[in-house]
Length: 224
Ligand SMILES: Cc1cc2nc3c(=O)[nH]c(=O)nc-3n(C[C@H](O)[C@H](O)[C@H](O)COP(=O)(O)O)c2cc1C
Image (cartoon, rainbow, N blue to C red; front, side, top):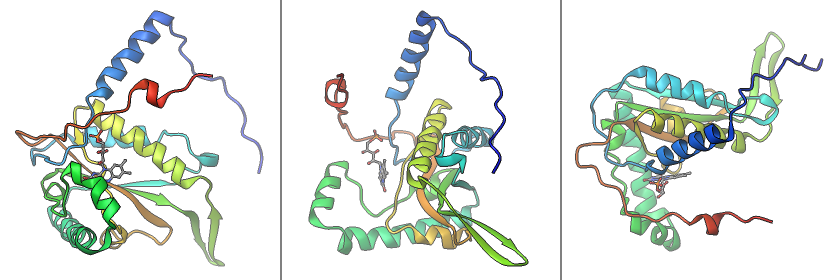
């Protein structure tokens, strides 16, 4: 393959004071992000969802393969099917599949198999990882290897969660286990695998969150 031609980088040089202000503002906004498990059915503008997905799809990815697909679910009947399937899997997990140490790690969060937010949220965004490229032609199917899919989709999901939060929306990073039912209900091709399920909306009136603590900067950063 021919190398890409290079174009000048679009880069706005900022003054240090302006950089610090921007950095503090973003930090302050992000410090208020929480996983919300009580989501209102109040509608929210679709443009917020679309812009957040545009933002996620600008994330870096291994060899620029952009191995992701964001499926937005707004149809109440599809949401109902997703809730039903997720609750069936989660109930089985909580009651039979999760080992004691996993249940113990989750216990302080107070989560269980009930997932009402999957129906109340105005939108569910299901992030799929595209494990390999798949093209069909008269000679049959061609598969292309994708590199660093997990890392790339993880970074894109981070962009997505940040963009949704900055837009004044509440999200939950939800991973009902196993998640195969999402590919089935949403009719995804065989090269796509569910990565995470994100209900999005406004917090329900009176929504609460667990009073968790985050590690301090001294715990998470080391300077050499
Ligand atoms: C990969 C991943 C999977 C998660 N899966 C679930 C889940 O299935 N159900 C749930 O209620 N929370 C889930 N969470 C949310 C975490 O419990 C939450 O991020 C954590 O408790 C920290 O809380 P915070 O997001 O409010 O800071 C998940 C988070 C991540 C990053």
